[in-house]
Image 1: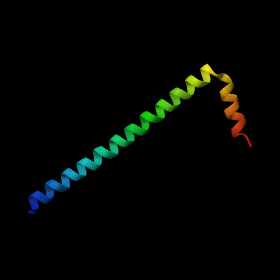
Image 2: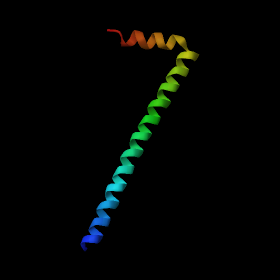
Image 3: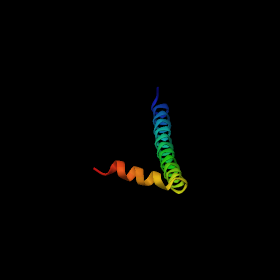
Image 4: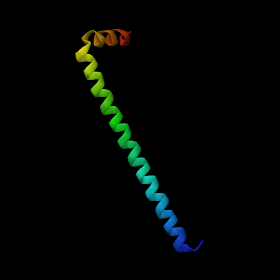
Amino acid sequence: MNADQRRRLDRFVTTLAFWCVLGTVAALGALRLAAEHLDRRVEIAYPESALITQTLQDP
């Protein structure tokens, strides 16, 4: 493997790693937003569930 091929391979791996990390961060952010949205919908539909959750979390 010559120097040019090595450079191209390094660049490819670096770019692939960058997009994998970016995609993972975006997916986690989307999951967090979806969880918050669903949590709000549950609190609206079942207001007593928020009280139960708060009671369970209190020592």
